[in-house]
Length: 248
Ligand code: MN
Image 1 (spheres, rainbow, N blue to C red):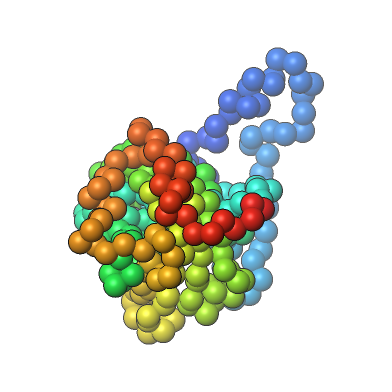
Image 2: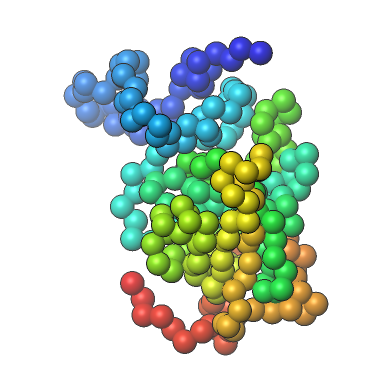
């Protein structure tokens, strides 16, 4: 099925900002219809969000379009979206270089270091996707309901780009449900399998590790943190905090 070019198929970008300014601002050179040449990616390199934007068709879905963020934030965001698609899974997304590097985790995270969860590395998502909750309509890629299951900030241990390339990312999470030291490790060699398989696991050795028999965060805290904000788990359960790392 041929799809219309994204620019034609997409609803116009939100015009709220420019509209609110329009009454006072002089006519500016900024026009929505101004055609812009696409920057050519170097040979062999893939433009950021190319895979995300290659999804069949965004018409009729509230999901945001794929633009690379230009945030100057000192802290990196993470989000976990609970997604009732053809199968329930948890989309685990870490901000890096203005996009959300993403893994689909069928069973969701576990605080039990012995419970290693399969995590399929999927296409980067735009930063603006972090706030998305709602329904992806039938017929669209990933059709089903999405809620923000957790969000907060993450701190890589070591160079995250190197870690991503080498298939071993270690990081702290500061979320409303998840905290402590976690790891994503690649188990399939690149290109070896159809899916880029990783494992998501809780690292041992901090006060956050807990046996799944004692505590299952997936069943204990099933809801949206947008609808039911919890605040940082490190503040709710400070006794679990490891010796404090100095604030950035
Ligand atoms: Mn998903």
